Image 1 (cartoon, rainbow, N blue to C red):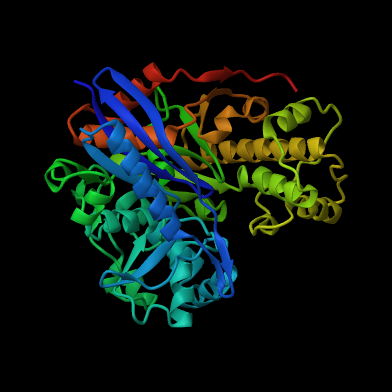
Image 2 (cartoon, rainbow, N blue to C red; image 1 turned 90 degrees about the horizontal axis):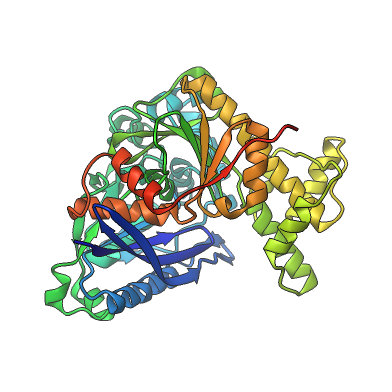
Length: 478
């Protein structure tokens, strides 16, 4: 029997609520709500507009219930690392955005307490200046932790508001830097060494665990009676969006790499255990938790943020909206060589005029800068494909995993130029899609928890491959 579940998928630029219909031989999705996720800059920094985001989530769930009154389950995934501080049932301020500049003080304080080598041995995470433990350290310096009783990552916060239950799902908790890379439990020794209150960190749960049922006020808001709400479960899934996306990679073996391509690009392989060698630390690769105890061994690349922020800059300067697909087509037609820049240069992290920063990078590296918008777009996409190729070669060396095919999932799978250039630069077959991999992975783990499907991740991926045939890009000679 086919039944419906609802996936709340919150990205760094937009959110969506999707209905998923699943049985042992059926998998389909239908969007019921899409909404922007726009940060807000205030006098004290850059914040997520979390109340507006939650309002849209509840509105979207109301639409899902109207379409499918017999909805069986709800689950939330989002981006990683950011959190809200809670006392009782009260949030102590809007969560900071990971692109806020406050974390420099946290990096400095943490580095004085624990060396980079020790930290990597404990948590297995790549260094990123906005990792959660650095944000906690910055909040400790500012005194913001003094009144806090609990810290909840974004999906856990939404679940708390829906159910009243404060839990921490492990795939997202693994991105905090405070989960032990081997035990997948809170690292009490590290937390104590960093001087953080142990009580901030709630009970950990695995993907597939029921969180609870909707609070009566929430049930009423989305149009359910209290009785109907009792049969609707809020379920923990791979609440880090990449963890859910990796569930939906339609791979048929283990000789694959994945690129979850969106605002960020996550380039990685799935492993049974962590890689915490010194070579891995120096290469800045990370070991994040995956569903079913798997390890997502990967590295961050700046991602399509480079393109979207450039477009935002051009729209602001011209006062006119830009249609991206024609611009990508113009970029594909560029025949003259364009600059290939370091996509991970820290100057590209903060919001602002990215085209000017690309010009600055080119000037400081004695490279001819792009001149037209089409050349800028081609330069960005070539640079992303080059970064992907570099990461793929590092992955094979550091993990020992042979990589025959590359699966690109997420929004970047729709960018034919990016997919083709990735195949060309890596010399490997690229399989593109599904674009809604995160929502699909979210749906599948809910469905398995509900008994609608059974089996390993491999059997779930076979269902994805059957339902969403990928587009194939073969490498061309360069």
